[in-house]
Image (cartoon, rainbow, N blue to C red; front, side, top):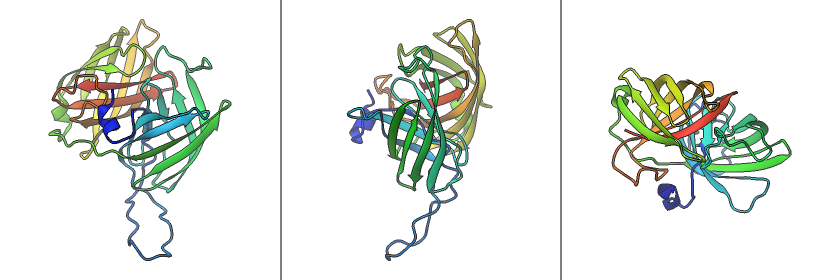
Length: 266
C-alpha cells in the first residue's frame, strides 16, 4: 500500500494540512547573501506528504496533506482519521487548534471520536513542521511538498461521470458517486448512507477542489453536513486499484459529527 509514497522514501498516507496556506507568495526574494531575515510568509497551497508520531511511539505514520490557500487544511492517515488544521493566512508560524476526527465506526483508543489539540509550528515553501498536545497526548508532524503526476483534468466538467472508490480505514467501505459537469454529485456508500454535495475547483496544478457533502441515512456512520478538500492525480496513491490507469480523486471532509477520507477512480 502507498507504493508511490514509499518510493519517495516516506511511507504512507494520512490526511490533513490545508489551511496552513493562505500564503501569499512564499517568494522572499533573494537567495544567497548571509544576513537575510527569515521569511515571514509561506506558499503552502497544494499537496504534501510526510509523517507524524503520537505519544513518542517508535517509528512514524506517513501522511498526505492537502492545503488550500487561506482555507481548509487537513491530513489523514491509513486508518481514515482526519486532522484539521487551523485556517492560516500564509504566516511562517503556525498556532491554533488541531482537531482530530476518528474514522466512522472506529473511535480513538480513549473512546472519543473527536479531540482538540494545541498546535504550534513553522511553515516555509518547502517544509511544514508542528507539535501538538492535549488530552494527555503529545505528537509532532513534518511535511514536504508532494509532486503529484500531472493529469488531463483541467476543470470541474472533466470530473463528470461515475466514480468508484473506498474510504480509508477499517473495512475500507466502498463509495460510489455520479458527478455532473457542474460539480454537483450524488451517491451511496457501503454504510447505507446517501451522499449529495458539490465539488468546486480551487486551482489547476495540482488540481484542488473544495468539497461539501451531506451524508444521510439509517446508519450511524452518516454524519450530516461536512466540508473539506480534495485533489486529483493520475497516481493510485493508496494502491486500492492495482495501479490501474485513470484519474483519482482524493477527498477528506469533516464536521463536529464525523469525518471520512476516500480515494475514488474515474
